[in-house]
Length: 303
Ligand code: DGY
Image (cartoon, rainbow, N blue to C red; front, side, top):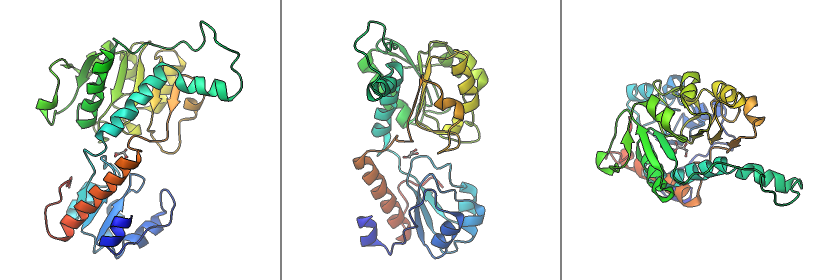
């Protein structure tokens, strides 16, 4: 914020998450540039009332909150914040994976609630991670960073991906397979696809049925890539061992069934939430805005 104030005349919307539509319309009316987060939906109507807007710097790597065609049609550049959050999000994915497999949140609740009676041989038995198979759906930057960490746990890595942006960054030990096979053969499935019409509910009832009953699903990408109702059903019926979720279909609202399931670890969309990364994301937004306003190519242009 300090760096933004130094470079630009800054208007900060009232601290409400997400801001009301009226606040958004008012805030953008005179703006030449906007930094927005994934909770702000910038659609055709909003953009049509922002006549001076030249660039939207999305404070996230995902940009499903912006209607790109509407921005393109008005000549507005859209940018995101890749790279700076890759490792941080991969770390959180592993935190969730380990917490889910080893029942960390349940253990914490037991101790805090004063219900712990002492060590027992069969207390909160979890699943081993070491030597298991990790299935990655979406082998982009974050998928690869998650896969790299798996070697520390001597895991087999399987993956499926529509496209692979940087083939030289793939480890020859990782095996590319059709999605159905990745689902059927993995002990842990971790999702790293962007949210697009093609990836909406990429994990639905049929895909969950392909997974092993001993497997865990980890999602740090976007909530709507998983059919939450189908996930709740699978967990309730014992067709899946557990899930670690950082993102939800209707954030901040959760499917009520999730809250009742002890085998689910729930986080409030913390993927990139470290101080260093969040500062870097802000600086990337400023660099992109500055480039566009100075007539240069924005380094992280997505539209
Ligand atoms: C992203 O970058 O897309 C995250 O979800 C927010 O940090």
